[in-house]
Length: 300
Image 1 (cartoon, helix red, strand yellow):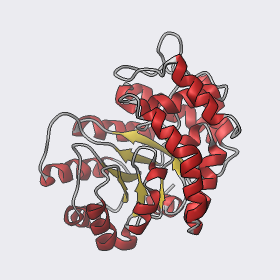
Image 2 (tube, rainbow, N blue to C red; image 1 turned 135 degrees about the horizontal axis):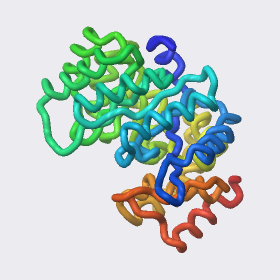
Image 3 (cartoon, rainbow, N blue to C red; image 1 turned 60 degrees about the vertical axis):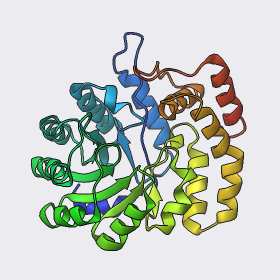
């Protein structure tokens, strides 16, 4: 799929990030992963980005990310396959090539790690990854890897396959500067943890869609909220925030890393074998799983 075609597909639709299940030996569990993907496929979304943040990319070996992409392609057929990509510039370039060779159509470029870098350095990393692949590249503005509107203008002029900007910083000022400056040149995706909590504010800043982690275990709820959000039905959005999203956030906020752990627990409670999260994350307690079960009850 060409970067332009992929850009048009994701411009307004809902995106989500499947969890990555592990077996008892802590290896990637292909069969449960594909069973979950098959279940999700009955619900229409613009795309799934595998081995992303919710998919614990930060704890996966590069070879495992490629395994996940191959397993996804076997299930989804010709549908677009996007994958998380990141780490240092050499690793990111190599991983982008491997994802493309495995049948990927695009990557979400997650931040580099540990060290800070000036705008020029952040741009050089994005430039190198874009040049390493023919796939579509979506830049994830988060953590150590933050970019300005001015830098993005330079990159979009040089890198035709840079097709998207996803924000997970909560910096609405920068988001608005980017969307106002770049216009239709990029697709814009809200990427805060449990982004439904921020979706309406981001829409006002020019981001017409977002990624939903809860789609993993309550796809009907995620799609209902996205439909109301897209239609400008604030009353429905606010009701769903009160009834589901704020209670979910209360569980999520009990411990660092639960933005991923709670999603994986939700998938498990829907009947899929997910295994545990990998360190440095930790699993929900029994009490917290019961809280999740109470939250899901009536939405299954």
